[in-house]
Length: 87
Image: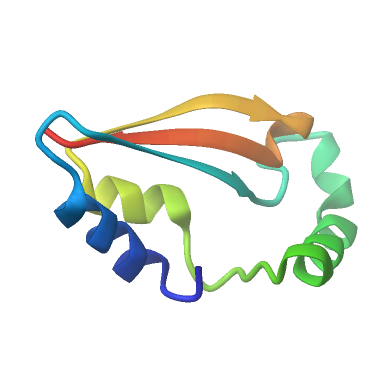
């Protein structure tokens, strides 16, 4: 999503009250000691998935949705599923 905030706001407007939006996303490893792989991980994910550090999916969800939670994490937290719920 080149415009993370815009895409999330568009989905929010399209959802009925009580609707949910789930995103599976990638990020750098958030905690130690696996953070040592972050420079390599960033390069790989940028190449493989055209990923960018310019936006934060969880921050954008939190700014738009009333309730946000990380549902599951994978690969030391580098991959995650998060859900935004519309009241």
